[in-house]
Length: 340
Image (cartoon, rainbow, N blue to C red; front, side, top):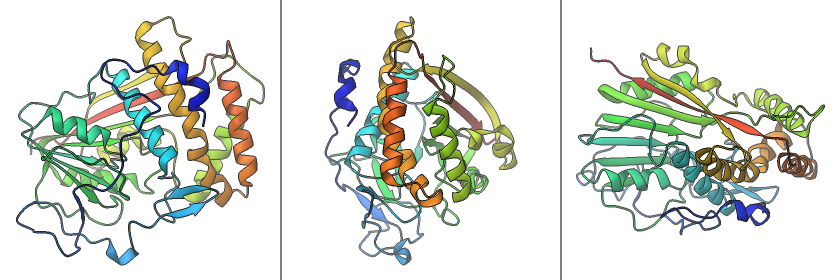
């Protein structure tokens, strides 16, 4: 793992978790929608069942990586959990320790986190808003044990049909899910439907890595181009296209805020604040190169797994080269459901 080669960049700050450390990821308070054994009076949520698609706890092993199902291109193994933990730290560093770009009012009652991953954001927001009910969903379960009493995890796929939550939300959070959904417009329409009037949807994501120094036929450009081609073959879009204003406006939203940060990869920036985010961003990107490309390229463009890993290694070397000054755009889109 590349963590060993750059751990000098990743000294923990404050009470942040060390990037090489991942808390135990085992099921805590999970509900698979529609399955028996849940007291419907103890938790007001939804009724959609995923049981018809087989066991949601099964993992598929491909090229020595574990995946939650046969379709989603990102893995769900321990290595990916480590990357997700680091990525959470990266986002909070970009936001100066805040959990969202949009200020969440203290009066918030219900928050939904779509694609919660290892649950770091959901745990942090449930601790910050102890009087609110937090629902965190994902297609697999590797969230932490010992979570706050106001946090509930659900196994669910946000793109599978209509959402069936029985109560609306004040704030819906979607982060790091580029390429996760074939129809983002449908997901945004469901989010709009399940927000309270004046409720907020916040979407955040990374774009493609860029080099500050032009390198002819760089491995970064080869990697980016190959992934885009594979994504097109798979029927998904990568990058930041899912955050275009017309897509959210078509779902009924009014855009409140839209900002893109240019985050350096590494510590080359003279800006002290950017150095901190850059440390986390570099490790997250290095760890994510194989994760984001292995299934896509082997399934959809005929690459051999060894070739994918070889290109990933060359990209890592390129990004670590002195003077290259790599960066990545990180966009935050805040959309509001206006009062009718």
